[in-house]
Image (tube, rainbow, N blue to C red; front, side, top):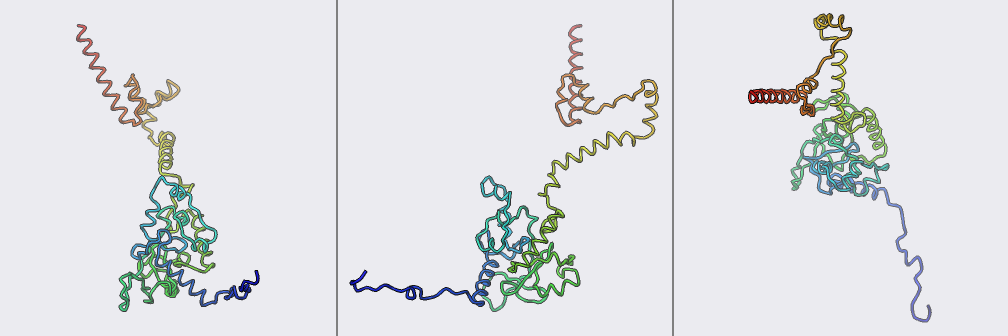
Length: 318
């Protein structure tokens, strides 16, 4: 390396700008930029947020209503199969920093989101036609520059300062819905204490079998599906009919059967519709029909046809 007229640069010359920690003003500017992006863009689809049709989950994130509906639609793709078993990140800040998929949101049904209703506001000085929100109490514009909250389950949006004056009345000023401090959710919270509070609230609701919108969680394992509920009701009705039905039938039936009980020693078994249909249908066609009323009608028709055939055979033999 010598005698070529060149020089070897030193480390000081290579590293002109030494690494340093960002200042407080730079951190605030970065946080405001991220918050503005979250207010204006859907974290799943990347489309602009439509404040006329916006929903929020239990974390306070904002989504377009169409995005949630599209994510809940059934599909045979692998992405939608992952949506059936949603994953929840342990670190909310890490999840918010990267692009979200619908499985990361943890939304399993439309009951896991609340539709927001903000007061539309268009400043006279602005030329933009985009809809903005305004607090109906303080008349302050809601957005990245001010902290906003919404009430569950009605979804009306207020400023953080206004909710402190509303809480003592325990009624939403827009719809008179009961106002509970635990169900006031901040929009796009950034503090870890707020996120921990929201997670505790959601754990309590899940333990009670409720969703974020305070509706019953149908996907919970203890409730079961509709078919199992119907089967349980039928089984309960059959059990009541077999046990209590005989006791509630009245003394007249018992009195009428006393003679049979004394002579035979045991009451005659009752025939239901299926047994009658089977006795009237020797071929067993009606016994294959599950509906007892349809089976009995079919058995009667078949019995009439057999009677007509016998009469024809007797007429021909004469």
